[in-house]
Each structure stands twice: as structure tokens, then as C-alpha cells.
Image 1 (cartoon, one colour):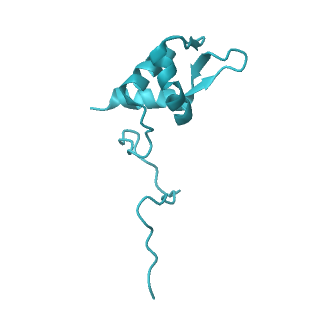
Image 2 (cartoon, helix red, strand yellow; image 1 turned 30 degrees about the horizontal axis):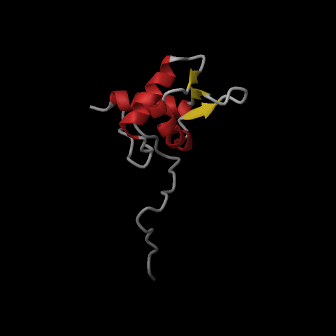
Length: 99
């Protein structure tokens, strides 16, 4: 009988018996690439907890990529104002902990 082998890039089955170590490094698949300008944008959003108003040209250029990654959320009543999501905060936290 032939054993089934998953192809490269296939999602791995989650194991419920073992928990990852709290200090384990995140895999590259967990991080969405947003570039250095995206990281700078996320830091500005994090610095304004009541919401960050997107008005810079550089912010508008990176806005879509960061939004599609799920790191920010637009406020429903204010189209140009965004807040950091929990995924965005975790992304910045992982970046600060990389050695």
C-alpha cells in the first residue's frame, strides 16, 4: 500500500495533543508581508488608540496591503480612520521579540 504524502504548501493538520512553546518563533507562513513602510504605518496606528486618521500619501499607498493582511480595521462611521486589530498588535509584538 502506498502512503499519502501531502504536497509542499499544504496546510498542516493541527495537533491537539501538543501545545507550542510560548517562546517559539513564528513561522514565515504566520506573518503577512507588509514591508517596512507597512510596519511604520502599523506603529503610527498603534500610537493612537482612539483611531488613526489616514492622511499621508505614503499611508494611502500601503493602506490596502495592511488592510488585506487583517492588521487594521476601518471604523464604520469614519472612512479614513483605522484601528489596530488583535492580529496587528500580535504582529508588531512578534516583530519586537525577534532577535
